[in-house]
Length: 427
Image (cartoon, rainbow, N blue to C red; front, top):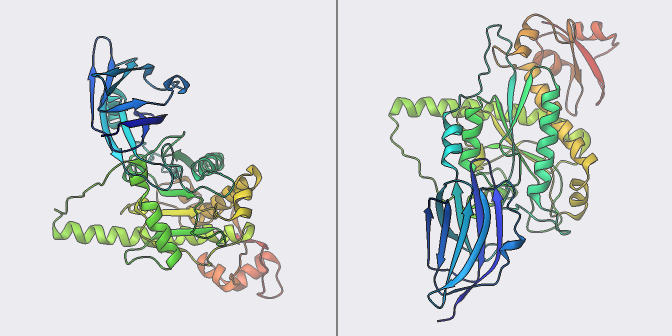
C-alpha cells in the first residue's frame, strides 16, 4: 500500500487554543498524546512521509517552541511539538472541500486559559444610574483554516470582514452610550455555536455578523441584510448562502453539535415567544441598516431577507447578518479590498444601528435615559429622510404629529426629500 505524504502545514493561534493543520494526501491512521516534564505533544502517523517544512511555520503567539520530526519503525512518521506549557490535545480529520484536500487537524487546548475564560464574570452592563451602554457584539465571519469565499483576484472573505468588523467596532465605541465587542480579534476560527455563546456572555443587546460572500456566478452584486427565518429562506440566493455559511463548521472542523430537546412544554412556549420577539427586533434593526446601506451602495434586495443561518439562532439576542457585497463579483471584490469602501459600508451599518436604538433604546441604557429626559441633542433629535419615508410615517414612529413636524422645521407642506435632515421634538 502506497504511503501518505504530509504536503503542507499551517498553525492558527487563538485565545484559548492553537490549531495545527497538516495537509495530507489521503486519510491517515494516527495517534496523538501529550507528555510532561518537559511539555511535549507527540503525533504518530502510520505509513507517512514528510514533504512539508516545519521550519517555515511562524510559531509566535502559540505554545509551541519547536517542531521536530523523524521516521519511525521504517515507514511511519513521528512529529514532536516542544511546548512552553502542558496542553490538552484533540485531533480529527477533515474531508476535502473547495479550498483544501484531506487534512489532519490537531488542536492544542490551553486548559488554564479556557477555564479562566469560562469562569470570568460576564460583562455587567447595568449600573445604578440606569445609564448603561448598549452592547453590540460584532462577528467577523470565518477565520483561520476557513478562508470563506475567495474572489477572482484571490481576495479572502475572512480578511475583508475582520477589517470591517474592527472598523465597525471603532465607530460603535466612539459613540457615547455604546460599547463594541468582537467575537474574534485575529485570524483564527470560532465555531458558529460559540459565536452566539460569546454574544450571550457579553450580555449583548445586538449581534452583527459581517460577511462578504460569493455566488455560483460572478453577476450577483449588492449588499444584503439577513435575519433568521423559522420557516426557511425567502429566496433561492438566501437559501444557497445560508447553506454555504452553515457548512462553515465543516470547513472549520467544529463538528456537529447536538442540542438536547428535553425542555418542558412551558419552557418551549417561552422560548418560541422569545425567538419571535428576537426575530421581530432583528427585522427592525435590519431594516434600519438596509436603509442606510442603500444610501451608499447598491442593494442586492430591497428588503431584509430571512434564512436559516446557524450564527443567527440566538433565541434572546436580536441578530443580523450583513453581506457587504459579493466578493465573487470583480467590481465588488475591488471595492471590498479598499479601506475607504469598507469604512463607508461600516459607517452606514452603524448609522442604521443607531437609528434603530435611538427610536427603541433598551431599558436602563443611556439612550433610554436621554430619550425619557428629552436629552441627547438638547431637547430634539435629528432624522435623515430615507427612500420610502413620508412625513406622516416619521411622525407616527416618533409619537408626534405632521403639523408639529412642519411647524418645528419651517415646512410649508408635508413633502420631504431623500437625504433631507429634519428635527424631531422630544416626546
